[in-house]
Length: 132
Image (cartoon, rainbow, N blue to C red; front, top):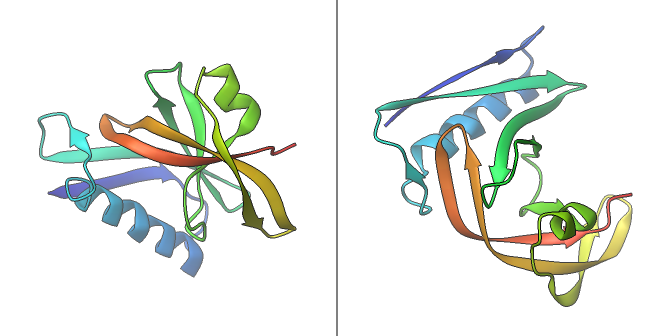
């Protein structure tokens, strides 16, 4: 599977190149992780680079388009607690999540379908934390 990545990039530095490699790896590994792509041989994943953050557009459980942040240093997927509630997602359990500012209260959101540029990732579990 070929993956084409395009976006707005003013300068190429090591962290940007690593991020693009991760995006490309996700595309090529998408079938391994249960992604269900539409029938085509390559994908264009548009993104914007804003303050060294990779911002993608996608949807969660067929929601309206949302801006998604690709954090290559995160160990899992996180959704803002208020956004999860707005989307009608069920928050389950209580746990602690490690952040750069220390541990925070968190819940799990199971059965999430993430869609980015026509690549669908079904049945994911996200961690929900209060991001204010």
